[in-house]
Amino acid sequence: MKGRIDKTEFIQLLQDKMTIMVGGFLANGSPERLIDLVVESGIKDLTIICNDGGFPDRGVGKLIETRQVKRLIASHIGTNPTVGVLMQSNELEVELSPQGTLAERIHAGGAGLGGILTKTGLNTIVEEKKRVIIVEDIPYLLETPLKADLALIGGAVADKYGNLAYLQTMRNFNPIIALAADCVVAEAVQEVDEIDPEHVITPHPLVDYILAEEQ
Image (cartoon, rainbow, N blue to C red):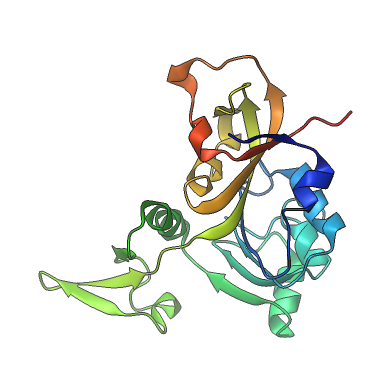
């Protein structure tokens, strides 16, 4: 870990047209403070990769409400009506990816793989514009890997070294996205001196910064 940063230093990391992965599941485990700072920064034309579209007032939904997102890659958008409205008006490009497929695409990006093969989505709208590869007479969809410029992690318990554990279901997509971004920033809901190594989920070499607690 490089260290702790305050909100001004975090905003300096941001720029237009970034690809940002955001942790959370229906806003549970979402890095709300970090998302608020992205909103405050005013950057735009973002590609957001996350499990879902959040809610209009929570999670990545706040970025969608402010029209800062150009493209959304997610598995579910039903909790945020604004996503559907912007899709229909061609103001927001949305790529829906089945949840398990989305997770494995992120894993593939983090592992440096060229993609994954899956039967999920065959003969459905998911198959459109994708390659079908035959392996031992069985067809699979080739799903491309996902990587990001920045990953925003929430729901974390952080120690002084930058190791992270997670509070129950706040874990969700957070550990996965830490593998697949050039820069990883975590928002700690609790800070401790040291985490038992057996309980560390995201080790400190994967974490670049932790957002300092508000004073």
